[in-house]
Length: 329
Image (tube, rainbow, N blue to C red; front, top):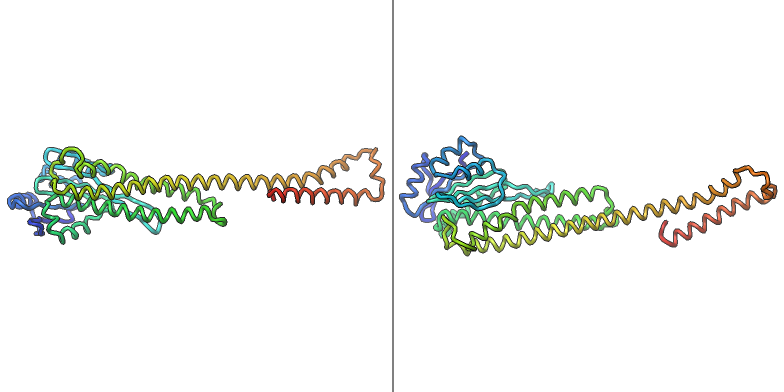
């Protein structure tokens, strides 16, 4: 469905006409204006009219409708097609989810297609409308503003994940909770969140780097906006560095937890072995006297029974002190 449609001339908004073709013609006739149409999860039938009026390439249209695309930048004859993956951090469940945002730039028009809830378009449009100087860059200003808002939110999500990792790390090394059987699954789940985040941030680097001026000029993008895209690229580099650091740290935390579990299991085995050894001594002595041999002269001694019991007790005390000194008990 079409969420918003407006014409921006000289940095100021005017409402679009009822007919998309008339709206685009009005923007092109003005010379210094462009149309910005925003759609949210359109169906194929809803998008057909936009495709026909704006001459969008069929491959890009297919990507926009089906979604599930990697961040990328593609140039067609009549338009530029960009894909971004905004992310949303859910503090209640400590999870990261991603949406998809497709942007078509062409002669005097911008078409944005949003999938999911993690897209900052409403706030971006409101911010741009308060900045006529930026809007005078034309459709390029929309691409920059969306990329800037998306990457800035990446930084916020990276900070939240860093906080979560510190809490998880403290729990792993806590003397009380470090051995919880659920910690390993929580670490693995956290690593999955890092992977989801990386899928959004990593592939975005080449497109942003290209928009920032690396290589040839990008069609339909104002060269005067390159410094702005370089700023976005700097922020994205910081985000990717943070993601790499988080991934390494969570792997280290998992290794440390597994090492702790291994040490704890060894301690448990030593304790079990120690108690088994202590139980084996009286069992062995009792077994000897339970064989009912005829030639056991000490059986007729008056003090045999208390002596054997005392021997068992002395051996048990000696073994207990030995194991205790070695830290096995």
